[in-house]
Length: 351
Ligand code: NAD
Ligand code: TYD
Image (cartoon, rainbow, N blue to C red; front, side):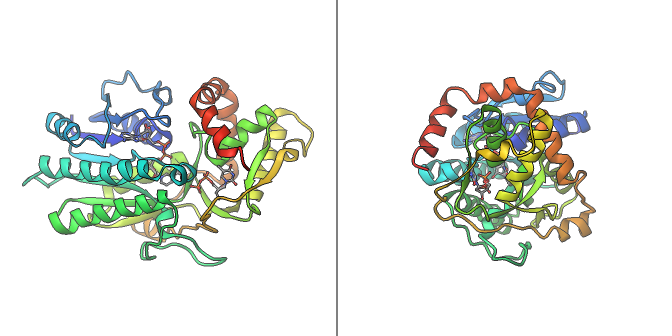
């Protein structure tokens, strides 16, 4: 095998697309998916690659420092692509400590394991940290986040991701660890966990339930198709400069209410319903505390330095996404059972 790469959080939404991209594109790499299988981890996301000869799954929790070191000593990875995280802003508001443990302590455990294993042999090694645009805080009506925008996180989620980014840079500056960071905008696509806006609305339309829009619905997010995020990670992992960070986005901003209306329009069409049927479910509910008004990525650096372009338009990506959920109702219904119902009830009961 030419390289051994540990991908953390590979059973989650984005991680599963990254694992698939690497397993299929690099048959001479050994891809190790390290994941604790929390509520968000689902090995069903990887059923098409689970028997590939260059793929190994290890169930492990990144908050366990000694276990991380054992795994790194045993497998001697050349690269790490770190996606494992607690990823939902609303959950970070109710359980912030979980976010500190996984996103901050877990990241530092992985950095220590890499540093210990790579001592004196840094040539060809790389630690790629997958982060978010939410570390930059919020924008007003104009402007874009660049790689030089000062960090200004507002939610416990974004604060924990910002902290992990700082540790990544500190290990580069202090110990010379070869790191890169990517900060991506909101993703959407197949396997998206239905606690997040787009799959939540798809599921609720299928069940005829209200589509909860926080506040006035004018909050703005910049959306990227998940496969295009995985392609960007591949590019930066192989061609990015050590110590650098790269914003990833597709210049695709939507106010939440406009996005949900477009989703409703496409769902009506695909389900053969009269136009306007799904939109009747739109319900304005109590706002999220500390809700960031607007995220928008300036993706000029990755475009000019590494030649990155998204491969699909938003309309195409959203259409593929809806088709995937309609063709994979069993996936959706299984995820929608059990513990997720308890979360949903608790999260939306006072709204
Ligand atoms: P997700 O919640 O769908 O998946 C997270 C995965 O990490 C799950 O498989 C879970 O089992 C695993 N995990 C959680 N805690 C763990 C632990 N302690 N040890 C080992 N594994 C653990 O998340 P996602 O949306 O796929 O996001 C992946 C990464 O990308 C995160 O770091 C997130 O901050 C970042 N990101 C996400 C978005 C987005 O829109 N979803 C945008 C930019 C960046
Ligand atoms: P979300 O998918 O949770 O991603 P993030 O908070 O990381 O951007 O939310 C996207 C936007 O949709 C955000 O502005 C919050 C809003 N939202 C709703 O209006 N209703 C909902 O039920 C959810 C989950 C989110």
